[in-house]
Length: 183
Length: 183
Image (cartoon, rainbow over all chains, first blue to last red; front, side, top):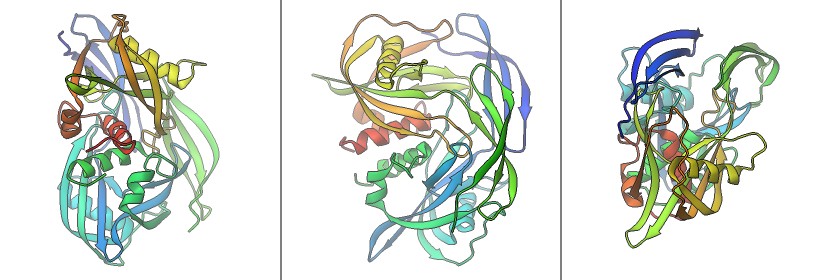
């Protein structure tokens, strides 16, 4: 079956400082048209930071309030790309700003759509290794974040149960495991 | 550090048939206020349907155009809950409507936020087993879907590379593996 749609036109119907909403007139594979709505927002990075020492492998994670779900969420660090920044640099910068850990090695784990049905942007996943604590945490004025070091095994076992509620962190963990992590 | 915010008021600023946007005045742990925007939408199900036979374990997946990302995506079946429906029934219904496979066993894998920073809804993950092909595929008028049977190992290996671009499918796979799947 032919599955490809074509977009005949598109217009913004809402915009704020975080995202915009577009309505597009699209033509189906069989020639019918309809209006489809989607959200555009900047690409962002999610960084899986690993700390290996005598205590074994731990992840550096951040606990913070999330206004969409209206609850606390324990997550891998990350943030939005700045204009002109290369993705690995952005990942390292976001990690250091949120947690004060600076990686000397950043590896791409993959790049996916957070939800291709309704979102136009991409989330880029990274592994960050060889972390040094620079003491240089620089939170935004409205960021309240607890940095926590958690055994990797515990996170893998607990993902999906509160406070590990963020599905895109489960996706990050999937790509981490795909890369050779053990289950 | 105290991390809990309180919402002082909230108002809708955009609404269509799929979702609505709210702007909320929120008070931070230190007492400052700010406006935060989020999207509310119905909860939905993602179903990991497994088929075990002489060819080994395969997943039943659907390939379809996605208007947000403007590309084809190969995904686990799923869809929005209907009012009053119990989640397992909704999962079985959505699976049969999209693929014609009816499960005799549906198990919850977990429930997460698709993105707690900006989304107020939940995605519910299920495992569907003992599938029977009823021949009763019932697509919506604007659904163009290819049903594909794919070796589980291949999907686990390829997740994150096109056409496996949907990050919430990686999250579903993470919960599937957490349940005892092998990597």
